[in-house]
Image (tube, rainbow, N blue to C red; front, side):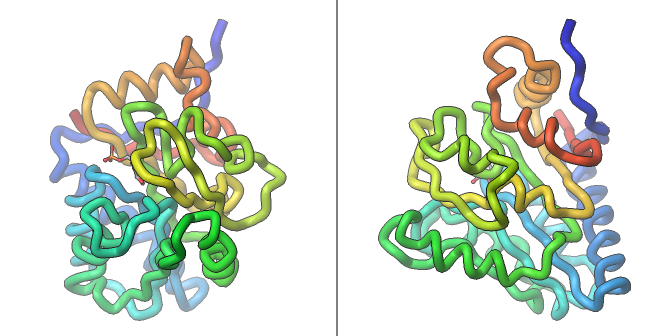
Amino acid sequence: MTTALPLTTHTFTDGQTLATALAERVADRLRAGLLERGFALLAVSGGRTPLRFFERLAQASLDWSRVQVTLVDERWVAEDHPRSNARLVREHLLRDAAAAARFVPLYTGAATPEEGQAEAGRCVHALPLPFDAVILGMGADGHTASFFPGGDRLDAALDPSMPVGVVPMRAPGAGEPRITLTLSTLLQTRHLFLHIEGEDKRELLAQARLGLGEAAHYPVRAVLARSPEPVAVYWCP
Ligand SMILES: O=C1O[C@H](COP(=O)(O)O)[C@@H](O)[C@H](O)[C@H]1O
């Protein structure tokens, strides 16, 4: 008998409605951080799914000049490359009201993520953790952040004893070399969201949650299992 890992699901009819609701929820978390600490800290994902969410969040009325934004993971490509997660954030989130936020990229310009690890790690160490919100995505292969199935440093990235920092990652399905926050770093957050869209990802997450077949080994399951609070899943067809 399998036990379902805990999560809460927020279901929406379409991507625009989801983006609006998630942006409102995250903006509230940032405002709470600003009230409590005088600053706020946000980590977001790359890929294609967050576009509408970013554009809604960029319009939120709050003191963005006291908000720091970073990525949960990065593809090791220059910032003007079409697959750069930093480029996505700069073009779709750091605009409108959010143009005043401070962005902390993970890509350093070094030739490889292994060579860039120390510098990117120093930038992450300098962040005033915990995050007020972390928003993860998930690929069709069950990866989240750059925790890829078959990743060469997956064990290190998921290791609970790993300190705050980043880990390079290379994997058959990753496209290019990556760098990713460790799971221990991601979990230093007041609120953890997982934003997925489409029936295929809903089904994949359900299987990972239950630990069924191949999905028992999907890295996203490690996040569900280790999160101290149930992960808030935002989903639409
Ligand atoms: O490569 C990546 O993919 C995942 C999922 O992206 P999506 O395009 O399927 O939404 C993303 O969460 C991650 O940050 C990114 O580097």
